[in-house]
Image 1 (tube, rainbow, N blue to C red):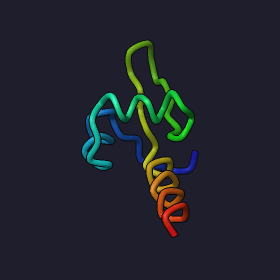
Image 2: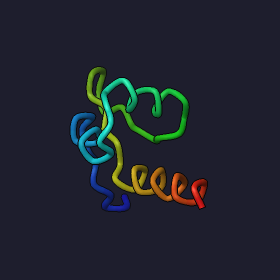
Image 3: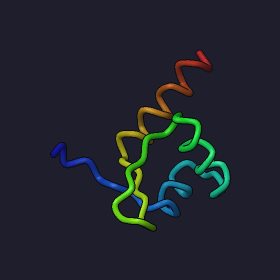
Image 4: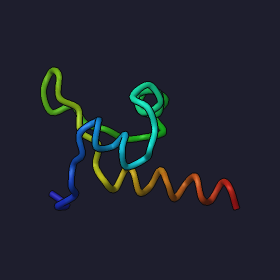
Length: 61
């Protein structure tokens, strides 16, 4: 275990400042990693959010 914090979908939406629809599209497309903890419980590791933001910055450069 890496000790990585796990955010709820609403927390990840606030972190990225995007809508629920956008967040789920990022997950479905594979651009953003997430894990399913139980049948209706999805979590997004903070490292996945940081990696996504890093990729966006590199693409913009």
